[in-house]
Structure formats: C-alpha cells, structure tokens
Image 1 (tube, rainbow, N blue to C red):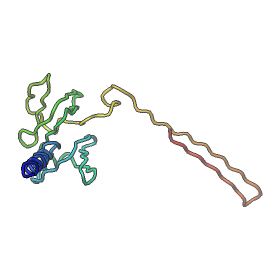
Image 2: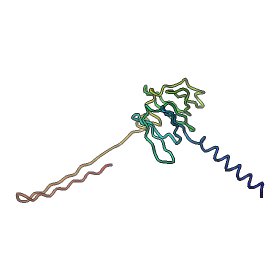
Image 3: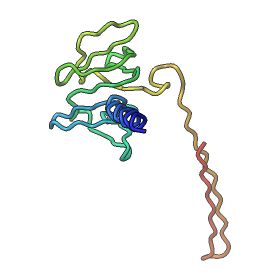
Image 4: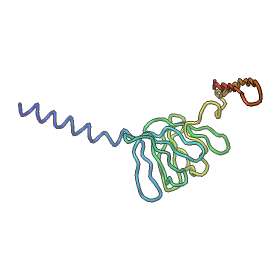
Length: 153
C-alpha cells in the first residue's frame, strides 16, 4: 500500500513539474511572464491562448518568447522561417529546426507575422463576398415600405 501511494505521488509530482514545460512562454518588457499557446501575431498584436482566455498583446511590449512546437514566422522582407522559437536577449529571438541548427538572433521588429494566414504566405486565398438586395414600395404621399437583405458569404 505504501509503495503504490509513493508511486502515485511521484507520478502526480512529475506531471505537475512538466506542466510549465508544455506551454509557450512570453517575456514582457515590464518583467511579467505569460504562459500559454502562441496562436498568431498580425497587425502588431500577439494572440496567446491561456487557461484564462485568449489574450491580445501589443507586440511592442514583448521582450522575447519561446515556443514548444514548430512555429512559422514571416519577416518584414517576406522571408518565411519555421521552427521552435527561443528568446535569446531582449528584443530578439532564435529559431531552431531540422534545417536550421540555430539562427542568428532575429530582431522582433523584423517579425511581421507569427503563423501567418495562407493568403499572406501565398499558399491560399481569402474570399469575402457580400450581396445586397433592396426594394421599396410607395403608395400615396406618406406610406412607404422598404425591404433590405444583406447576406455575407
């Protein structure tokens, strides 16, 4: 009985110790650390999914970040890089993958997108459409009936 209790406690302790390692980490310029899953960065907003909800963080407030999984970034010159991100010094990040042993530090100001959408990378297109239909009926000087319908596709 004692052995199984000790094994259970060890197993739970190991899982609890692994929990922080399973999350991406964002280091803010004010010294705060945010753990969660980096989902995207566009329009200078970093989107992070946390257990408490989705956060939109100003990119200018990020000192550096690290990711657990391969992440794609697009630089201002449209260069695409993919790999695990790691923070080196404040204001920079490194990227590591099978093809890239470790990159030179990349300034955060050069990063335009994290996990860019397919229409930005050229691998897909975005389609947005809207149709407007309207009709009006008048009878006499004061009675008017109007109908409008605007579906989005």
